Length: 445
Length: 101
Image 1 (cartoon, rainbow over the protein chains, first blue to last red):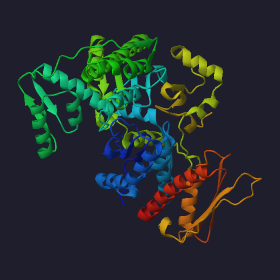
Image 2 (image 1 turned 120 degrees about the vertical axis):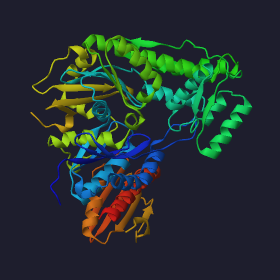
Image 3 (image 1 turned 120 degrees about the horizontal axis):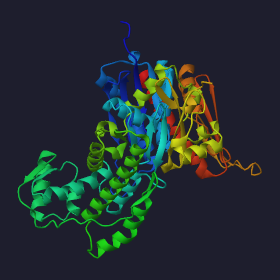
Image 4 (image 1 turned 180 degrees about the horizontal axis):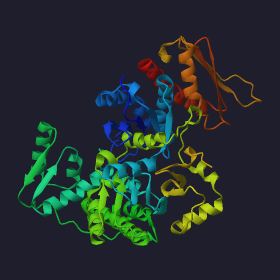
C-alpha cells in the first residue's frame, strides 16, 4: 500500500438523541458523516434507555455506510474518537464507548476521547474559517459564550436551563412534532406566519404538516398541501394571496432575563406552561403568537449578551455552534448586530451545527496529531465533566467562574475553562500548541 | 457466537444468605469459541464499573474462550437493570467482532 499522506479519524457521536459516525481528514475534509436521529412522539422527550436502544440498532449500519461512503477501509483509519461527555450516560456508553473499545482492539487503533462542547466549537471553526471569534454554543444541553485570547474562556451562560431544552419543552406544551427537532418546528411556525403575512409564500412541507394544523389554516388550503405532500413526499407551495384565516401574529411580553453575562430561560418556560396555556384556552393568543414571541425573546437575549461579550473583549466576529445555532432568526439577528459592529457572523448549517460524528473525529484527530490518545482502560464516559475540577483548587475555580475575563494563566500552558451551566458542570481545557484539549487528556507538567 | 443463542447457563435465584444482603444473583456464560474474542469482550465491558456498587456487583472472568459473568444485587430491580444494560452492550460488542474480525 502506498504511504499514507494524511491522517484519518473515525468519530462516534451519540451523546443525545442522535447517533453519528464521521470520517475526517486532518485538514478538516469530511469524507463521510452519516447520522440517525431518534425521533420521539410529539410532546415527549427522549429517555436515556430508549435512546440507548436506538443507538444500539443504528451504530453498525452507520459505521458501514460511513466507511463505504468515504471509500476507505479500516486500514486507512488512524484513530478512533468518541464523545466522552458531557451528556446522558446510557447513550454515550452504547454509541461511543463499547463500539470504540471493541474496534480499537480489533483494528489495533488508538482511542481518543473528545469533549462534546469542544468538538462543536472546533468543527465550527474549521468549517467557517472563523479565526478568533466570540463563540456562542447553543444546544439542548448547553448554552454558553466563550472567547479565545490564546485560550478559551467562558464569558457567560445560562443560569438554569439550556436554550434548546427551553425550546424543546415549549414545543412539548403544544405537542409540536419532534421531527427533525422541536426548535426547528417552532421556527417553521414563525416563518409560516411571515410567509402568509407577506402574501408571498414559499413553504417546504416535507416535515411541517403538523405545524400547519396548529396554524389554523383554511381547510381547503390544508387539503391541497396534504394531498400534494402525499403524492410528492414533500411540497412547496407558492401563493400570491393573503389567507384571511391567518390572523396577525402578535408579540407577547415574556420574561426577558439577562443578568450580566448570563441568561435565564426557565422563566419563559414557566410563563408558557402556566399563563400562556390559560390564554390559549381563552383564545387570547394563538400558538403562532407564542412561537414567535418565544423565538424573538430568546434570540434577543442571546444577541444582547454576545454583543456585551464582543464589546468587552474587543472582538468583531461571532461564531454560533450547536444545534440551536441552525435557527435562522438567531442567525439573522446576530448578523445584523455583527454588521453594525463592523464584524461578521460565522454560522454553520444543520449538517455541522447538529451533533455529528465528523466534529468528534476532527477534534479527536487534532489531539491525536499532537500525540494524545486515551488508553483503553481510561476510555470511560461521563455525564458531567466535573472530575476535571479536582485539578484546580475550588477557590481558583470560583474566582475564574465569577471573573472569567480577569483570569490569569495558571502556568505556562494556559488553562481554559468552560462552564456549561445547563448541566451545572465545569469543564476544563488546556491550550497547548495551537489547539486545546480536555484537561484530562494533557499530562503536561 | 450470538450470545443469546449460546449455551448460556442462566442461574437466577433469590437464595437466602439474607445476612449478606446480596440475595439476588445471576450467573451466565457466553461461549465465544475463541480466547481472543472473549478477551476483547471482557476488555471492552470491564472498563465501565457498575454505577451503584453498593447495590449491584459484577464479576467477569474468561476461561476456554468463554466469558463468565456473575451479578449480585440487593434488589431484583437493580439486578434486572444492570443485567439488561450489560447484555445490550455485550450483544453490540459481539456484533462488532463478528463484522470486523
